[in-house]
Length: 412
Ligand SMILES: [Zn+2]
Image (cartoon, rainbow, N blue to C red; front, side):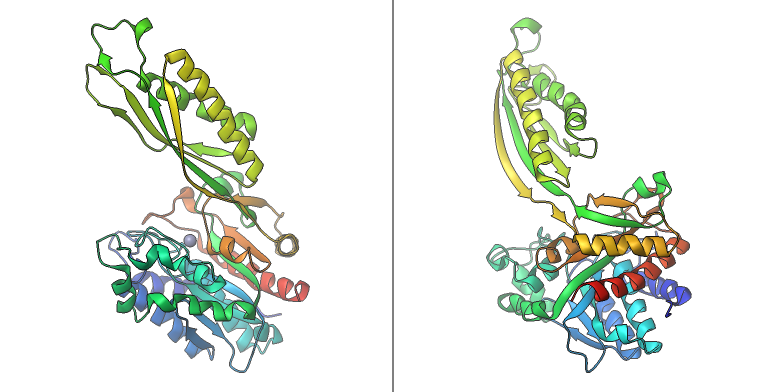
C-alpha cells in the first residue's frame, strides 16, 4: 500500500512557512496579500511538478487533480491564508498534507489518485474583510456578495480593489460554485488549536462536529450616582450586577453541559469614574457547543440568573443578539470511517468537537464531510509559537491518506 513521504511533507511545510515568514517563527500570509499570493503560486508549482493539474477559481481557491480525471472527487485540503503574525501550520498543514497524499498516490500509480482532488482555500481567516470562509462559501454558493460590495478592508481599502489586486472580480466570486457538483465528499486535516489532545495524551482525533456560536451584547441599566454619599443598600449599581453575573457564568454553563463553553470577553462601565456608581454596564456574551439546544439552554440559564441579579440590584437588562452560527455536525459515515483509520494506525479513536470554525463546516452543509486533528503543542495557535511535533504531523498525513481511501470506498 502507498505511504506518504514524511520527510518531504516536513520539508514542504518548512518551505511554505518561509513565504511570509517572520523572524519570530510566525507567518504573515494575510488573505489577498502579496505573501498569500506567493504561497498560492508555490502550492500550484508543487502540484505541476508532481503532474497534478492546478486550477485557480474565481474566488482564488486552488484545486488540483490528475489530468484526464473528471470527478466527482473526494476533496481534501484546507486554507492557505493566515492571521497576521500567525502560526505556520493553521490551514497550511491540511493543504500541504493533501498535496503529499495525492502526490504519493500518483507516484505509485494507485487508482485512488483518480478519485481525489486537493484544495487550498482562500481567505478562511476573515481578518481582512471581517468576513471569513470566503473561498469555501463561494464554492458552495453561499457567499453573501452584497455584504462585501461596498465594504472596506481592515486598512480602509475598498474590498473590490483588494480583489482586483489579486486578479479577482467581486461580481464574479460566485462563479466558483460551478465546481460544487464535482465534489462528493470533503476531508480536512488540521491542527487542534487547543490544549485538549495534549492534555489527554491523544495523538489523532476525529472531529465529531464544529460548535455553534451564539453571541449577545448585554446592557445593564442602573442609576448613576455619587459613590461617597450613596450607601450600598440604596444603590442601583449596574457594574456590581454585571460583575456578579459574570462571576456565575462558568458554573451556570457547566451546570447545563460539561462540554459547553462560554465567555465574557469585554465589559465596560459608564461613565467610568473612580467616584461614580456605574449607571450602565455593557458586556458581550459568547456560548459555544456542538448541540444547538444546549446552547439555547445555557443562554437561557444565564439570562434567568441575570434577571434575578438585576432585580436584586434594582437594575434593568437589555439583550441584543449579535450573531448565532449553528453547529455543524460531521457526517456519520465519514466519522465512522475515520475512527476505523485511527484503529488501523494503532490509535484508540478519540472524538472531539472543534471549538474553532473551519472550511469543513461550510462544506458539511452540502457534501458528507469530516475532519482529523493532530495535537497543538501547549494548545497554542494564531501565534508564532504554534507548533506540532514532526511525529504527529506525519501521523496526521498518514491518517489523511487512509481517510480519503475509506471515504472513497464508502461514499458513492
Ligand atoms: Zn485554520
